[in-house]
Image 1 (cartoon, rainbow, N blue to C red):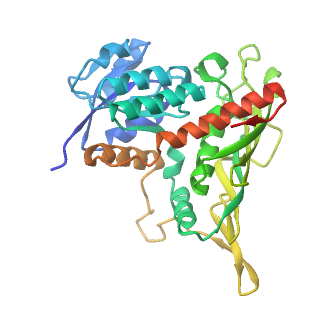
Image 2 (cartoon, rainbow, N blue to C red):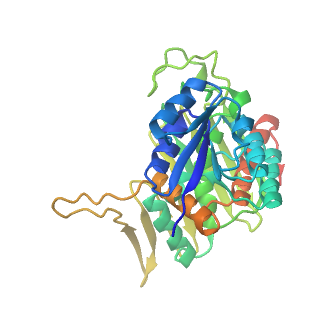
Length: 359
């Protein structure tokens, strides 16, 4: 028989309400039994909407972690608290799903990996874009070797005008950065996963705070406050891997560009290529001719059936709970997420110093 996993949510803000809690609520083998937020009313609201009848609420996560009946914790706080809470939860004998990015710094991320190994508990990071249909399909293509050796790739995270103006997104101290660490991290994770290459050698980076200075700017969520905009509005990286492969990472919340893509990648290999622009496209050469394939990922086309499938967040949550119940390895391994953080930190460092960072 499949048992029930008792889950706690630490941080009951936007990402918990928009992703984690709705997806966990759909799983019959999950009970959300504890909720914690420094703003107690947020924890109370979450408990009322998603929790069991006897769910408990906390302002102090240390108090929550004393509950030995909790088996798994979802860490959904600002980035600066990821490491401390994750490590404390692991050491409290709990499995942890930590929202992306893994941590603000490589040192913190390394401590998280070490804590998971030391305690023997499972740790995964919330890179939910791996669980999209196009990502899952393309990963199978790459695993099978259809693209050959992937030696050039681009990680896309470009918004034209979509600066998040709520919470602490614009606070460098709490977040560690802007679009690079927020959405660039998703694109980089996807790219490294497709390439199955986690050995960076040297990183060059540049970051800009140009459009963030504008007042009354056009923006998807309304004008931002230039005084509170303390992070970059765009950042770019050039990464060379140990095997010679090259990755270009582009990220922005605000950029004067019509070439807009987010959480996508383009891949070039010795046997073929692929990109996620306008759907999933594969390209290559066969019988002396070039070819291009547009992959049809929909399952509809039948009367009274729209082909609905699991969302990326739903699949992520289901597989994570399965990892716990069946004692299997998570799709997103902490060692992989550590490399993402390492590269992002190197881009920021290179942007500040104007020098290449060797890893």
